[in-house]
Each structure stands twice: as C-alpha cells, then as structure tokens.
Image (cartoon, rainbow, N blue to C red; front, side, top):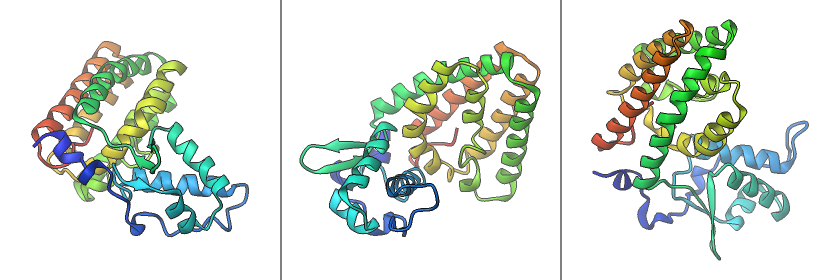
Length: 248
C-alpha cells in the first residue's frame, strides 16, 4: 500500500464531521485572548491531534456556527492556520486541511534528513549543559512511556518532542524557521497519528537515546550521522508498513 493509499481521504475533499471539532465556544475567551485566538487554538489542536483528519473540508458557515463567532475573527483564525500551512484554500468551496501526497512525504523526509542532521551537529556544538539536560529528561520519559504507556502517549507536544528541542538549541534562526515553521506543523499532523505504531516505538526511542548521548558528548559528526539514519529509518518504515506512518 502506498503512502497515498494510507493517507488519502475519499475524494480528497471529505467534510469534517461536527464531532471532529472541539466542543468549545468562542463567546467567552480566556483573559488576554481574543475570539480569533480561541478559535485558532481550538482548530490547530484538533488538526494536530488528528480529530480533524488530513483532507477534511471546513466551511466558514460550519465553523462560525460551531464556535458562535462572526466572520471577521473567524477569517483571522483561518489566515493564521493557513500561515502555518495546516490548511489550504479551495476556490469557491472554503478551506481544507492539508494532506500530503507520496511526493510531498518523500521530499519532506529528504529535507528532514539533511536539515535535522545539521541541527544535531549544531546542537552538539552550541547547546548549553542545561539544554542537554532537558534532552536527557525527554528521552528518559520517552523510554518509560514506551515501556509502560500506549504508543500514542510517546512524543506528543513540544515539551516531549525531542526533534523540536534539538532544533531550538542550534543557535541558527534561519534553520529553526525552516524546520519549525515550514516543515514541522505540516508533518506533525501525521507524526501524532504515527505514535500508535507499536513496532517502531521502542526502536525510535533507542535511536533518540543514542542521538542525545552523541550531543551530550559533543560528538557533532556522530550526532549528525545518527539523526540522518534515524530519519531514514522512519521513512523506510513508512514506506514498508501499510499502517499509518512510523514514529520518528
């Protein structure tokens, strides 16, 4: 089964069920947050957690009715989601959650292999001891989660996301923007769905441990090589496994 068969939605334009949207109203935003902020965060979370599937169609009418919000703040939220490349506009039909094709995935993983390998090299050279301690704490938690919790519990969110933390330690703003702003959010839609692939989780966690160990030892060449192998292994598992893509 190809990645397209794994990831596609019927017609590529399936409309999100109302149940896919979070049961949240924008009428009473939290202190300091606008209605646009509340709606943006709610839809962002629903997409990244998989509650709204890739390829799902969202209409302004549906979203306005669900959140009880006017078109102005709603369009502001949609523009921000589009800026994160989580949704795309469909002429005369509203917006759709981004879905990645086989070619998209191949290109993104090829970029990740090079860029995240470089990120590991720079992290080994520039990360502070405190930042490395954060990486070590993450892999300890991931190891415990892989042994004692469902695979879906491993790696969710920035605090647990080793890849995100490594990129933050590169001291390279352009590299950070390229990975986190241009690649991270689109791919995270699939990465969070990948956590349920139990056969990949233990190996992925062990690869994380080796990467962090190389960074802690300031072995820049080794850290870069291990991350590149890690991304390659994730992509090969994605291609070989007919279930949703493998954890990375």
